[in-house]
Length: 319
Image (tube, rainbow, N blue to C red; front, top):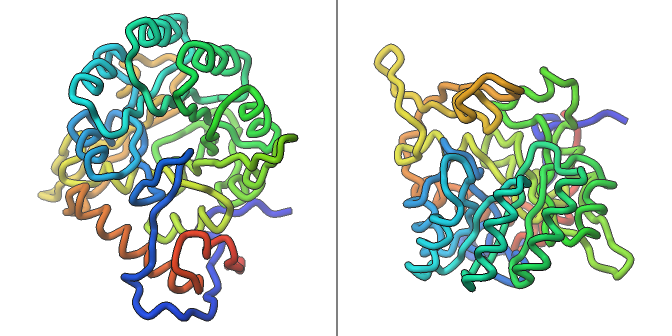
């Protein structure tokens, strides 16, 4: 069977009785909390910072603060002291990360969502880290990844993860597929990894991470079975993103780099990412979120419904 990227398919419209596209609801429920949109700015250093994370939290959007160059204890302490609406952070699988979890438990720090974020999430260290979080902060919802197979989704969910982040080697600044040979094109990856049902009847929600080139790809990811979608380039290109500005021939670009790049790591060991110089889109985060809202409302109307669930009933064709 041919594996498909988002660009390999087109969505087929359904009959609609929606009076106006503006009546369509693009909000999403993640583990019992409703957020404005299913889109998530990638938890990367060139995409999101504390100021943007706080603004997203206050405005009802889901976010995940990245784990690079920050002290996790300082980040969580600030979020608690300022009483953010949603506290959503990232961590790794090292001993220091687990010690931070124990510290938060001891000091009764609130964390709503913890993303355990590593390149190859289907591994023993992921399992032990999930167990650590479940033991010490049982109230936190765990997002775990990244993985790219149905078996991995099932295993991480059975280990205790609430949401699984799916996608390996498909982000534009990621070179994993070239350096290692491992990847699965995103539309097929999401389709295969969605609708995984555990023995208790629970269907595992997934976040489709990577491969988003335009707003329409968000709808395609949801059609494939994603509950939410993560993108870096859509937001790194915003005027107020933390990505540095680079001027090339008088045109402003943003320095968008992968989490496994030398720019992010600060060294050249085990590099699986690169620096992309992307043209700024001329929009702030707020402008971009409004554009995505309107485009998703249109997608919902083409799907023939009035909320994101309608996208689950859309057919597609290969192009």
